[in-house]
Image 1 (cartoon, rainbow, N blue to C red):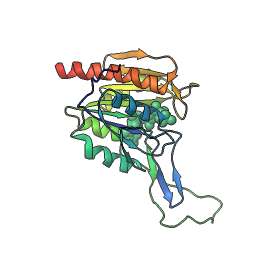
Image 2: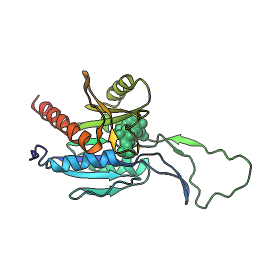
Image 3: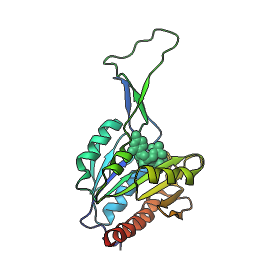
Image 4: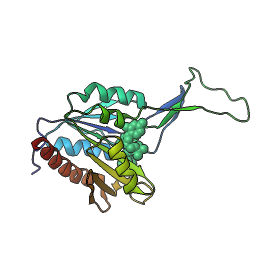
Length: 223
Ligand code: PMT
């Protein structure tokens, strides 16, 4: 029987890949399926939390008992999270958010003309960093999708974005990261590596992560 150790807690999970439009029929996105974020939302709901899942582009199945908010772009995800941030106890940012978006969005389908077409991109707002800077009572968990020097970049994100925990996945490993049913994660806290998990189904990864997150939230609240 799952303990209800998140009963009464407001939890926000973000999932999926953001969509940055070029014109009405074309967009930039990434390989995120949303499965990792959906698994975390379900794991939190099973522990009694009141969960809002802010989902960009995803192929994951809806979850019973979880309130879903659909968004498209990084900007929309930012607004959806900020609207709910003050009342949140825990925020988990599993979404793959675009770092760049097209500077211009055409109102009509872009026509074929020259041999080469250059698309200018601009930086999006870093949602996690924004949340870190505004953090009060909230417990903030970020993800890090890396292909090299995983520990180094994970710790850099933890410090720079003011996160309580970072879940790092080496997305170049088979069975880890984008658009698969399993993941291989390493969890980092301010003291460094806390746990390195073997390859597990994302739902199992989510349960193990939620156990540690819950313990740490309780320890932080008691401190
Ligand atoms: O969805 P799946 O197919 O199940 O795949 C899962 C996953 C690989 C997408 C997931 O496990 C994962 O790693 N998610 C984070 C992907 C990512 O964007 O990583 P990043 O290292 O670029 O970003 C670091 C953190 O900053 C992330 O928490 C991200 O949500 C956040 N971020 C990034 C850019 C931005 N503009 N705003 C952000 O908040």
